[in-house]
Image (cartoon, rainbow, N blue to C red; front, side, top):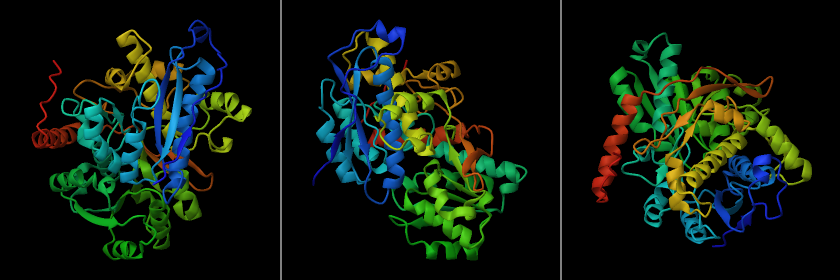
Length: 441
């Protein structure tokens, strides 16, 4: 199978823009940042903007700052097509790439993440599955090489239920309600089921499970069931073409869009625009702002796209999934900065970056320094907590203005419910794999 590798790192001399960067000599050493992407296949429309945001942020650091601590960042893409087997091949091909070896892997696939956890742990390369992957990897004592901050699928599931409870006038009013979960029939789509089953038992609502097979283009039978069962609310754990088909099908049966909530991978412009006015009022979870006018966006447009060096199209800078790729890159960059400070050297490898990710403490003041003020909540990671405890927010599609708007404040997840599930699952994984948990003390 041919694997497509595309080096996106800036290899030319950088334009150093700040006095701090001018005082840092350039280094011949480079950091290799793999980009496991899918620019082709049925999930490409959502994979492309994420990959562009990811690549552009590292390019910006090279151009604006001369890299990180004088070390340039070389992003090397490998096309996975959202295929787990190919994703593993990409990992094997890239893990020893360049001066630093692979610094970190962001698989952008729950299936690939599950497959890489034992491999990356043995190779001492961190996995950063931002808001996806194995939720119980939030337990850093069992999964010291995996990070899924700023929040997880299980936390998002509890936030959705809290949002619905608020709309219904109180959590006690969920008793007797019917909530349907329309989900991608894969490890990814099944992630929230256990959490929702626990909440259904505790709160007395009925949970209706409706799997949709890959890639999700045929859903007539699913929405016939919805029309017959008339659930009070629908949650969707979808990806790619499945999302736009589901939203169009929901609109065709006149399901109320303000009672239809998608996971954060079902809440991009690509998901709603094909449905036109029928998508108006549709809801989705998120862990960052849908803004396209932050200072960092202006810097990317001015320093990259104005010079023909952007990864995509300038008018797509700031789309939801572009922003998510950019955020992913920002967290990695901050982890590298932390690792340089912790280890007192710029010649880092993945094992050093692991320490930098575990020391993540992003404040609003730091976000403002990065040109991302108000973009995402503050995040603090610890040895025991690799999720960071981040809240979830609900956004709503305004079809007339073709933009996402806030539909809620930040919702704190039900941490007691989530943590109990996390600890039970991670303990079972540790027992199955003969893992002695890390002593964080």
